[in-house]
Image 1 (cartoon, rainbow, N blue to C red):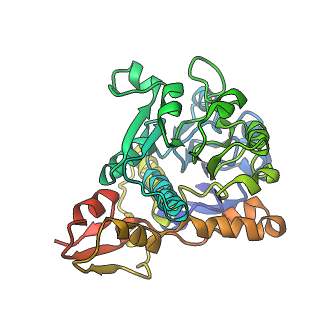
Image 2 (image 1 turned 90 degrees about the vertical axis):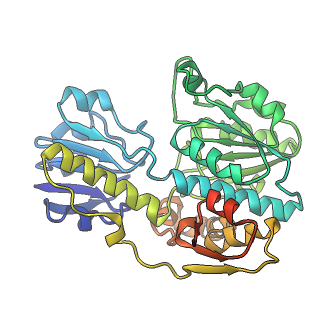
Image 3 (image 1 turned 45 degrees about the horizontal axis):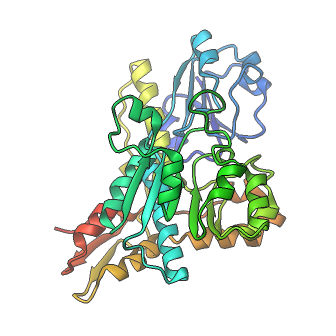
Amino acid sequence: MKILADQNMPLVEQYFADIGEVERFDGRQLTADQLIDVDVLLTRSVTQVNNELLAHANKLSFVGTATIGVDHIDTQLLNDKNIAFSSAPGCNAIAVAEYVISSLYALSQENARPLNNQTIGIVGVGSIGSCLAQKLQALNLTVLLCDPIKHAQGLLNEHVALDQLLAQSDIVTFHVPLIKSGEHKTLHMMDKARLKALKPGLTLINASRGDVIDNQALLEVMQAGADLDLVLDVWENEPTILTELLEHVRYASVHIAGHTLEGKARGTQMLYQKFCELKGIEATKSLDEFLPVPAITQATLGQSFNEADIARLVHLIYDVRRDDGILLRDLANNGFDSLRKNYPVRREFSTLTIQGDSSQLAALAQLGFTVAN
């Protein structure tokens, strides 16, 4: 059995080498000829799985994407060709939520503006949005949720319409799929009219899909003097992004919000488990076998540790400003895809075990840190 896997997917050999021969590919350069005699295709979001790519896929029986989003996959085509498909919903939800939390604390520090009593609007309440909302219960924030699809399905009672949410929030963060048409279209959800109407001082975070915000319109609004704090992990036309926008962005990164070691590896594990289920193979391997021990595993809190110190623990594990610095320093010489491919190892809050006598232990556990009994 021949297994073709994106070069940026971790642990594929560890999970799949016993099943077949693993060969790696560049996600943006994959051609139809490379799929000749391939049984399994494991991809990420940069590869468009469409009729053109599958033109010579004579043996393909399974396609898996180690991502939550599936807008890069022609699922109807796979169904028509009787090719099994699986995505990895929720694999990087924790990672993206922690990216947002790191950004919030960094902005709070730099703006000398406590998070207490601010209102944050979460647009899109799927795996990521709901994970973020749960974590934010640890902070003294008012959380507004916008997801008209879930609301229509009776799954979100507290839904706030988008324009109302934009007007009421101090921070707005997007976690929607890319939907290009229809009633719930998210392509250019933030168009020039909405961007111009945003209140001064608003923080706008996009860690979903770059096309959700009209990047050219955003540039024009910022050049016209809009007072917005921008945190952008995703961009239109990746990897050829609108570099003129960078000077207006507080924290910029190369579509890596979900790229913790745990988040990426969970995606691989989920595809392995689904493939084994479909083929009647016993799934015997688990993530704990493969993840390395992080550099820092424990922290002891003193009695003086308080709510204001939580940011220090968050940034001990991950500070978004590191990734902003890497992009600004290296984008011109190395390019977007190279920075993404060579992204430094990042771990999740749960890798740090907290002990000590502090009234903040419950909040830290809610954020995702491991709290010793």
